[in-house]
Image 1 (spheres, rainbow, N blue to C red):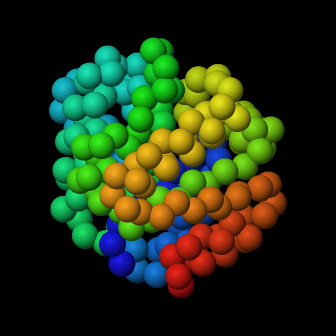
Image 2 (cartoon, one colour):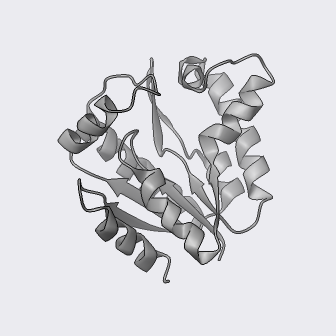
Length: 178
């Protein structure tokens, strides 16, 4: 099966869509949670604080998480193609991370900016920064294509529109060839 990476801007519903992978024997690993486990060892108390760390520190955490996940075998990795930091967009799949993970497929889960903004407003559990959602999705596409070209992975887009999660899940299953 290999590694499948699933990306999307915060609030797009990528975790909801990719949970369908569980039905096919894939283990789901959250890249940010793996990074946070590493960051906690260094005194970070809140997952949302990570994106405010110096870029060099975030890059180090990415390397550590990529190395850990690469040893897990067949997995679906829940992550971000880009992270909005105070200094701009940082690649979520930089060269060292994408080479360690060596995915077969990179999936971008997308929705309209209005749908994503509405979902974010209903999630009080996260400290979300305001951003230009359309621009963030474009940056994600660019970063995903770049990452895919490094390792020869395919890139697929799954549309997760409001009240159509079943359609998105079916698109994802087709991508997995299941």
